[in-house]
Length: 99
Image (cartoon, rainbow, N blue to C red; front, side, top):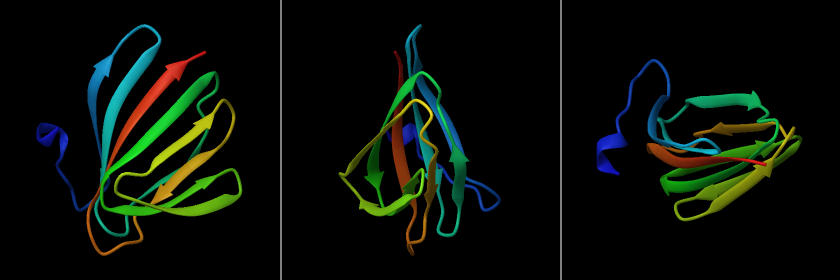
């Protein structure tokens, strides 16, 4: 996992880990203050595990805080966003699975 953890000052970083016909895994790395804008994943289940750090997720209009070890799930047309509003780096392991 360490090989997928790196950071840039300008923006968050995405590293592809594995891709198959109906699934994909990638790692997202955020420095404090960086965020992922709201977006849906039509026809996908999205599983996010907080590997390091934490922050605030929004699914549609529901906001909640998450930390290392928490798992987040959303699906289909739900809009997902994330903000690293902490004082430490955050690493998320994301799996997309097609219906």
